[in-house]
Image (cartoon, rainbow, N blue to C red; front, side):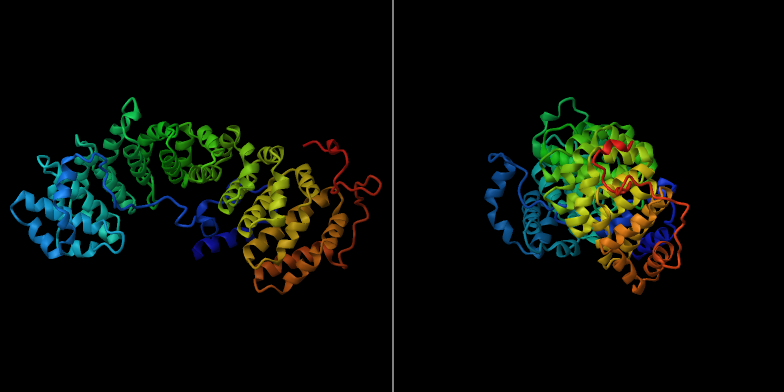
Length: 527
């Protein structure tokens, strides 16, 4: 993380004049990971343990057997080992079920004890016993719960040869067995890039996509389709390396289809899948944008369900870290119309992500900044600077600074007319050096516009009247050398008494009114 801080600081030191390439201004999630990382409870679950039966049918052979073997839950690990290694299939079945029950305990399941007892290879061998579906199911369930543990525990399942065995089970004629195999593969894929790519290499993705190729997805129970979608999302997950591009291109049509499903969990996990795929290079973003997903993602921003809005917004936020054209695809889909509500959302995390997204849009062309203006977002950004959550305020600061760097003279005038100065300057009391540097850069950019229209003196007056000059002067004693130098530079250039006024530059006043003041008739300015 310290590497990201250094990169950010280096970029800020070069952040002087307008006309910078948009790629310099856009901030990928890696650069704001500390501020924008979701709390674990809000993020998509990486692995899941099965503590309930997937079977609803009380007359199934498995549940009948379950009723006859209630004492199995009290078996010790030693008794389980003896039963699994017996030559009697019934004993093996009871022992495997006892192991599954131990591993399904809510608290402290003895995963390491089961691994140490060398039971994984036996359970994997039971997956192939198609003549005994109950033992296939119990073994799959037990292995699923082992794979839900730590990376080392998941690796033990992989090294036991479970991946090809589970892929074969995905096509079991018994839906509950197929679903348990899909769940297990989801846990394995969610462990990291290496395990994910092994599942893909063994053909797990193709088998999953074959299941989703059915003309009517309603043939699957909702729980089954949710598991399929969640596992598919884990095949999109993790970076360094990201999933193979060929695999991404294969699975995108399925994501397009699932994105139009009506199940809440299916939609949420599909959006998470897209958020993983868009968290990467422009080339990877382009593959997703070209699949035509953007308009539907924008529609989902209006959803009242936080579990869907969060990953849909994350996905669109990732897309606008890309090229101007990729950003434009989001704007063309009408996304900005959704942002007044998102920036004022009752959840601070949504406000923060929305502000981060806007900051990457204002890092684009001035025509894109104009779309932000036209959507009425500038007064809302000012509102956030005045009274928003601090983490959201930091993102709004970036949005404003990028705006002042790439905006036209008229756009910067409009920003000042929206009363941005006072709340922006007030945030100079923040303790975060990076935020201070970004604010000072915005002030410097606004001064460049003031110089062009001959209103430097008026801007100095406005800053002084809001108490901003005192704050800038105080920063000359800041512990950060970069902050101290930036503050000193502003004062030397614009506030020093030694810096004589250029009498040849006359402010464009209309009586007592200056361009930076809000005119009664705003149509005076052509935006």
